Image 1 (cartoon, rainbow, N blue to C red):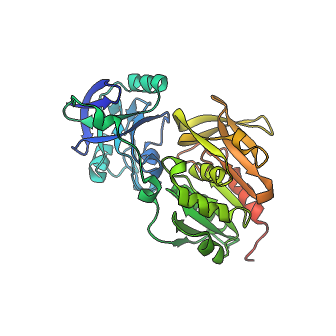
Image 2: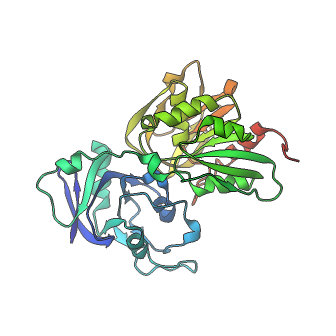
Image 3: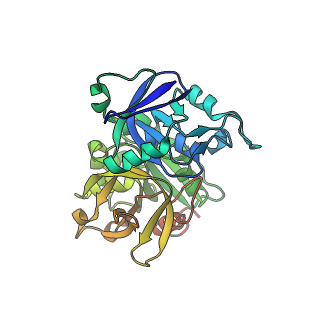
Length: 354
């Protein structure tokens, strides 16, 4: 047996899965009913111990073609782990995956109670361990740090468009999910992925038709150097930001962000478009939100979360820039808001490389 020890002193007993060592992280939960592979390979979970609310995980095994990036989470908690997956695409079991990637985890845990505590008391730190520590200082003192630097790519890389190239896009990689690249390539974009510490001058000298700011982990305010470079990019080219990119653009324009009580994570998050009144079901993974009021006179709020009314999108017409907190490229879904990529290509205008 092993334990999940929360920063408030609560202890949950379970059975070890994955890597056999102790780990401290920020405890969060995701409400997705499927897509556990995309969750496990989303770099935005860096530093976090992820609890799945859906009770059975691992039933379709591990399919490497579905990975969104490299695993960055610190731990994994499930109610019931399926050790005999049934799927013709499955390559091996989820437990094997966790062991290969060095991710400790627990199963046979009361995940409903863990989520209830998190919702009532807010996100807190926790530890996966073999023995319950008497002193919780180590757990309580943990903080997610150097998140973007830990998950960004090491060097620039170019991805070819599918079919005729229509546009060239510079993607700033703060922990980008692969389906952002796929979604752009499918629309005739050649995508150059740049490390997070790239300079605005280098990017602009490459003369892209548009710029994308990717998703990523951690506190957006930690990324002061990235924010300074984004400030130089705004207004120079059409710009589209997703998740952390949405937050960094707001900070670059003098806005503010705040940490949410327990964040939004999962593929069933309702978002209302203010212009039309329509509600979209979206995929999300973030613990911070932009304060729309801090951008009055600079931008227009376009989307709000239907549950807590937090900001889900901003538009800056004079700068040819728009950003969203949710994931329009979502895999395994929903894909209702994929039209935002079309909006971005429309902003770049015409077949630039016909």
